[in-house]
Image 1 (spheres, rainbow, N blue to C red):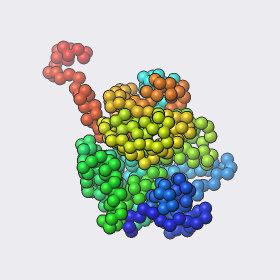
Image 2: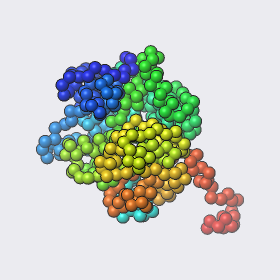
Image 3: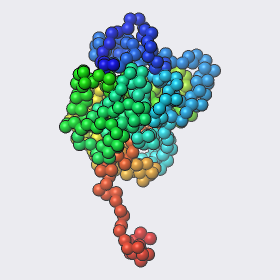
Length: 438
């Protein structure tokens, strides 16, 4: 199957019948103009070139009994994202297929971090470093794999700042696909090794992530791309839906309640927009009580096009050339940037950024208060949370969830300089006493 990008619109209000089985997914819909399309490996609207997203026929929950039954079905499901299969673009038997089965990671009650930051309400860290390849990317890739199966692709691919490359390599190995992924040539060594160990092809591109992404877009339109599913390009509408599971899990782990505030890192912005979509779906289904919530976006100062636009009151996100240690967030032209602005403003949130020095400080704060070693993206999120509290933009008395999206073992360089041995001594008690450690 060719790596499609556009298709013929579907007349009427719903997609026509299709042999593709992706569960409750009924078609694709343009975010900008609302034009509907059949399910397929497409990501751009032929009418206005707007981005496409998955539309659903969600379970009926017209009564309290319906809501209770859906909750019970979810809670009886596996301890991974497939417990939410009735709300995702996947076949009903997805849990029986070869998969890394990511998700249902810990929601850590971060009492020590709360004291450090001056939070008087409840503070939680959603720690997605517990996923199979130690980042949230396992969620989105798992959904993309099901779309790749449905559309007959044989090769999985992506453009990546590191975590996605590893997630695609691992998921492809488990599911029986060939993989070929593309990364900037100067990524952190830990991420390069992790992406390459799964046996697929790993290709470094001279340039930054935006250069890599442009190359992948060219490859999709070339005969060389025949049979290739690019999880974050021609499979992007399905891939993005994996981030909704973070919203589902957070609310379920809070006892089927919405948090008051969520702080989310921004790379392309897709994670933030899909978490908001997931929260809205839970409200629509009656699985949580409808109440106001605020969404805050977090960026590194060295790649902060969304926070720059937000603070200036702009609706257009002007691209930037990334220069930050938070390379997993180093996307200078974020595809979902304008939608992030809309969500932050609609919910009464904010988009903030922090310096590289503040990122490192935040990684250490989280590690010494909660025993969670975050990668640089987690440092950005915790650092921005600290800054938002200090500036009075985030209410410390409310229930707040902060996302840690990856494992610090992937970005050791960020903290290696001053996180080594406290002392080196001879193997004797006298030497230990002399070092002042007793």
